[in-house]
Image 1 (cartoon, helix red, strand yellow):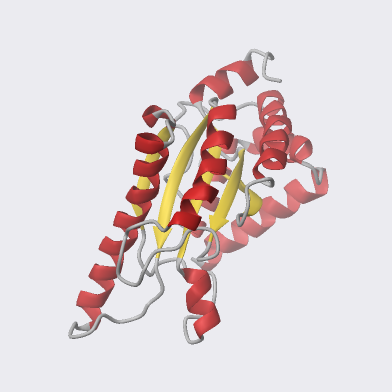
Image 2 (cartoon, one colour; image 1 turned 45 degrees about the vertical axis):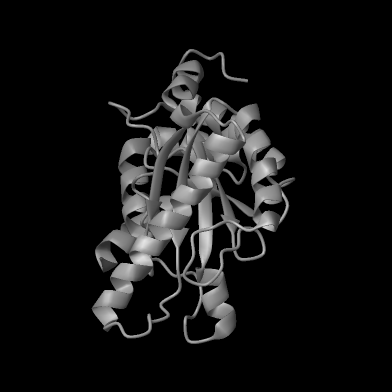
Length: 234
């Protein structure tokens, strides 16, 4: 694992030196072989499911166009209320956009997968973003804190949290598709990871609140990759 992380840091350092904006990063990633770098980064971060399945590494020119395009997607995503937005790398080494909704953005009652009304307002804005960017594929991931379930063993609690995170992620997908009219084919992956990949300290209430979250990824679809390779992606 240490060797893998060292490799990631080395490759990422090279990328940073070659450019700071998405256009530069897309070019650099394509040049070193996006599929290889993306697989390493994805494995470390736990997001190997995020990214269209492509047969070969995306070239430098196409990577640059996708990076520039995802700059625009990120700017639009920043208008979604109560979402933390950042640029990440998908499994092909291409730039993607990640929106994180903690309990301020998407809230469920304790032990429940039912969306509250405030969450639905935020999801309406997310749906508009997805409809505006139909050339982006989408992955939705649910997470919980590590709070134990009453009357359950540690192993049973972990499994219940895993199940709950899957149900919550699916609730988000169901609402986007069934109520808000997002194309079901656009959402390529809906999965719960339970207590895995915490982003904060579970020993504090504030940390637990951050770990109870839903992550939404917009990444290059095969159609976007094809357009980039043909030089027609705007």
